[in-house]
Image (tube, rainbow, N blue to C red; front, side, top):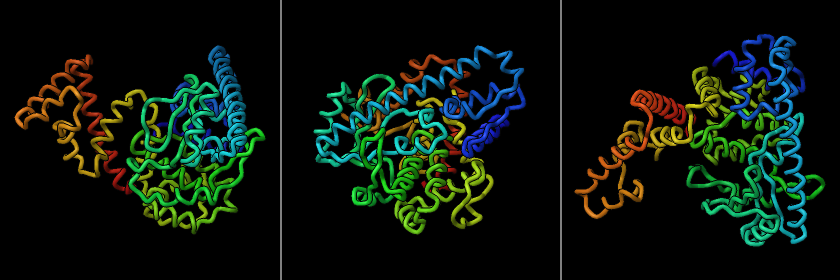
Length: 398
C-alpha cells in the first residue's frame, strides 16, 4: 500500500475510538484527502483530522471548503432523515411493516451520524405490501425508475435522494450462495426508531450476514470501499456482547461465505484494529491475500477504475466461474445472444456470426476516440487487473 493509504487507515482507526489524528507531513495531506474523497469518507472523518498550522495558512480556502462540504452533508442528511421519518409514519398509518436496512441503521454508530454519507435509503416490505408502498412513495413526489431489478424498485425524488423499495434482500442472479435466511427475517426482526418513528431492523446476526452478502456481491461486481469495512467493524464492535457467533457462523457457512467472511474479519483485525471474538486459522491471515484484498478496496473510486473498465474486468475475471483464458475468448467472440441488438442479424445464419464479430470489433474501435497508446494501456491494465481479480475471487471462494 501507499503511504497515504496507511495514513487514511490511521485516521479511520482514530475516528473509530473518537480520537483526533494529526497529519504531520504537509506533503501527504493532498494525497490523503484525495483517497478519502474517493472512498466517500472525507466528510465522515472531517472532525477527526487535525492539519498543521502551516498547511492551513497556505490552503485556507480549501480548508474552508472542506468544512463547508461537511456541513452541507450533515444538513442534507438531516433533511433526508426527517423526510424518511414522515414517510415511515404513513407506512405505519396503513399498518405496513417496514424493515430499514444497512446505512439507515448503521449511521447511528458513527461519531456524527449525519456525516456518514448516504447514497440512498434501503427499506424492505412484504411482497403483498409492494403496490401500496409504491403509492405512498409517489405521494411524496418520488418517481419510479423504469430500470428493472429482481429484488427492489428504485424511487427518485431528485439527484440526491433515492429509495430502494425491497421485497427481497438478495439478488440470486449475482449471489451464488444459499439465501434461505430471507424466509426468516420477518420472524426475527427487532424494533427500530427513525427520528421517533417506529419501524424495524434485521436481527443483529441477520444484519451482519446481510452486510457480508452485500460485500461479497459488490466485491465482484462493483467494488467495496473502506466505508463498507468501517460499517462492518462498527456493528460488530457495538453488538460484541450479544452476537451469537455459533448462529452467525452457521448462516455464513450456509450462504457459502465462510472463507470470505473470515478473510474479511482478518482484514478488519489487521488494518482497522478490530479485536477478533473467535479464533481464526492462520491461513486466513496470509499476507499476500490480505494485501490483495486491500488493494481492491483502495482501487474503488480511482480514475482508471471506470464503470466500463470494471465491467470488462468482472466479465473476464468472474464470468460463470470459467478460467480467465476462456473468458477472454468469450469476450472477443461472444455468443449471438450476448451481443447487442445491432448484431442480431447473426442469429439468422451461423455464417453471419464471424461477420458480426468483425463488425463489433471494428465498430468498437471507431466509436472509441481514444489514442492507440491509451487503448493499449487500457487493454494491458484491464487484463492485469482481471487476472488479479480472478485469483483473489478464487482464493476468497466467491
